[in-house]
Length: 573
Picture: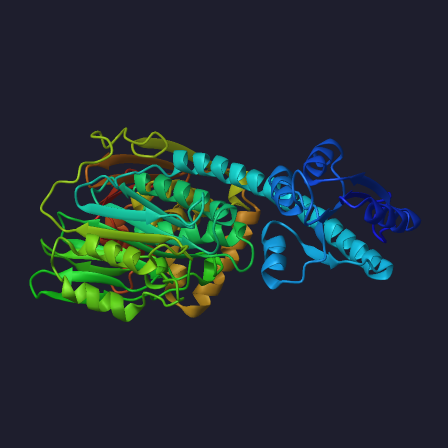
């Protein structure tokens, strides 16, 4: 019996000699196998179809049908199933033995038969058959898992496609190409028009393909589209995407990316590059390239506090062309394993410099280099042409084109005496105001405005502290001692905030009005009394006036209103 089989082997013997059949039957029966005897190849084929033996011995020369023809028919019937076939022969010529093997035989056994050799071959082929069954089972399991994986990737891609639609990739100024290595692309390309009319494009290359890439691609795309449509700046978008990827991606997974913010009317571009190959900016006026190299680590590598979100601002001219690609271009390999390489790409870029065919030539030469070999990586290429065209907003109405975006709104917020003792309202107010996309990157300035207004209302209004105490170092100490004392003893009082924001085509106006329960003051008289040494009000009001467009003190002086106007290009564009 086979060492690895749980039941006796069924052995089919096709031999036209009755004496040889008897000898073989005797040897196999004594060894514990179950022999089946037939007299020719035709009977062997019929017996195989009826009983599917574990091992077959065929005589080469038999009447009706010889062993070689029978072996071919049995192999065809067996398909992928491995059935060992051993030829019994007295032939010694090499050509005859080669023909036996080529017809589907696995070995041959010379006559007369040696029982020891015969049983050794049976055991060896039994182990081979068991091994083949194991491999076949493993193959079917792998195929099943692969089908599940492809199905999961397909579902993930369908979800991703709903999130990461084409955006504004169909604009005439943009040309793009993406060739995925698997069902789910490891590269991601998203583009959208912001409320200010600028075009934002992000090309990313995740580590891995399939589901590992899907893990990061979906939050990247949803964050990108959501923030661009709300008007957030490029640095804020990159910071938010990095924070999300750093939180969800496993260690060792990240996204190399280049993101650009192009404003055609203002003839400028901002770029953030982390880990992708250097980009090429063709300058039409000088007929030359400006290389824009990666200055940052890939997205998802650094924690939020360590991430560098700053971008580079680059002036543009009509006729300029911007090119960016994933490393699948440079690392594309031919059948010998040779990469396309940076030098070959550089020569190609200069050979077709400034020509409209450059985009197509890059793809043609890269695919020509790969030929019929399998790709190692995703291939992505983007070209943006700076042309004198008008970029339309996603919606014409700036006030309604994104439902989830704060545009025109107002709110009232009052802090009673019990909360004034412990609660700091400034972080909450700044967080609310930052929901206006254009105000998010001005949050530091607005915190200063709110801080000055709140300190004035609380300290000089509710607590009634005199600013003249701050004229000397000792007075500062006394001022804050009295502040702590009066705040702990506070029984009544309030500070209220009224915030109102109105959007404009290229920015907006935020009105902040702060009232307190104090007696108020007369700024003219107070300033006169402290002409030589400006007090709190002199410093505070002067600072607010320098930041805000208007400052109004409503009688009796416990009601201050400021107007903060902002635009997309007031130093932030």
